[in-house]
Image (tube, rainbow, N blue to C red; front, side, top):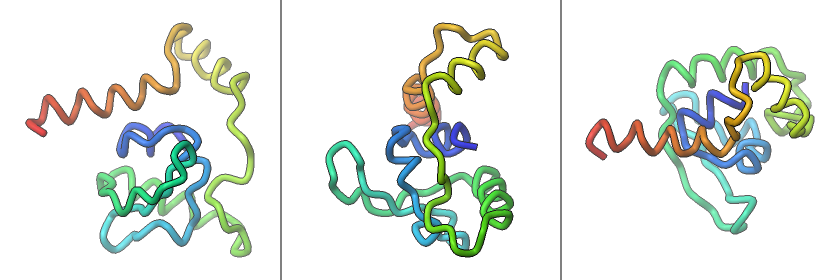
Length: 109
């Protein structure tokens, strides 16, 4: 589930891991974030509707007392397993951020 926000927003893995449920605005398809790296507010950023739909499904299945959308850390080992399964051994999580930037550029941003 962490891959979708990375592709749709360009957020770093640490920033995705720190998203709280209350940071997500489902009505306006946006998420408010704070940078874990710089510790500054990054404000609200739009999230594509298909990704927001999946986030909404995911969040609806979480415990009502849970504050963050992810309670566990996304280890390098887990990412390595996913990459191997997909045949993408050299693909880094940060490459999702670069892909987001490339898609923006292709769309004229």
